[in-house]
Amino acid sequence: MICSVLYGFCQQYPVQELQAWRRQIAQQEGKAMVNLPLSTLKQKTINWWDGNRVMVLLDMNDGSDELGLYDVWAGAIVNTIQVKGASGTIKDTDMVLSLHQIGDMMLMVMTEKGKIFDILMEVKNNQPVWAFIDLHDVLDGVYQSTDNKQYVFGMPDMYVGVDRYTRDPGIFDLTREERDDANEWSYIIEYGAGRVSHGRPVDDPAKINVPGAGGAGALMGPMMWGLNMTEEGLAGEVLHDEPTVDHEPAITERFELKKTQTPFKGVNGRWPFTSLRPLNRQMLVHFPKEVLRLMRNEIYARHGVKFRSDAAIQAYFDRQPWYQATNKTTALTGLEKLNVSLIKAVEDRITEMEKELSKYNL
Image (tube, rainbow, N blue to C red; front, side, top):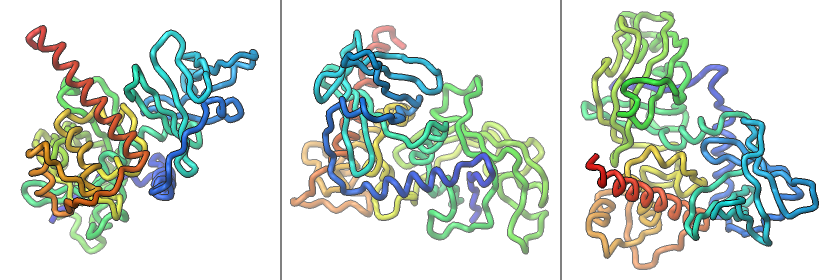
């Protein structure tokens, strides 16, 4: 079996930040969510991540009850927050902010007209690694292709039965290049800048058959994949690689991958991160509405909920080997409730956009 690993193992790959983040969220599991007054932030300086930007709420120091929403990367105040007791309102909008704490993790929830809009997560610094962490929480896993080849996203150490010698050092991150085919794919992934082809120490270099293979010690350029999220895992295509290199899969070859392992041990399902960490809107916009619906209901399924009013959803989870329906289900955690609400809000927004587009016969 060929094991193609999308793996970063160089100075540009923030392995330590990813590992520290996963240890942190593991420590919060099962802890209750507590509501805090937003005025607490007048005495604290916290960096917040919304999936796209790092922000800070700053005391305006003018004796008012206002806080400034400061975009760290842009270096500017982008909104003013009027604080009233436990919550605050973004000036000239219907957006309300509320503050919550789970263990030692702080969350800020944004609601609009009573419905959740986004979840902002406390981050420990303002380094631009959080998009990278979000990406890995969504994509990391072991995947099986229809022709029984194995593909691994993330560090091999996180999985069972993954051959460490198949690692292909390089960068695994989003690329933001403007490409003609970009609209076809939810993610454009680039990895392997500066790859050095290799195999097992005992392998004949001429027979190496992993991404970048072309003889041991050959310096490779980056490989680029287009990916879409599916109910089973991923669908994709290799968009670019070294034109003279034999690799798996071949350039322009399309593939379907089924997720068989995740890095979150002890938590069942294809999207276990939805029960473990706060989501944000930016993480969810890459998923089609049908997958979001399964993702949202998977949170309930982990608690043994029976889907009596939805035969199709019930049939889907009946096919999952880990699912055990019960009449005595456990309650969702505060974090899971927030994530369910956010997923549903993104689903509803997609439905609204579809209705708008239908008016124009698009």
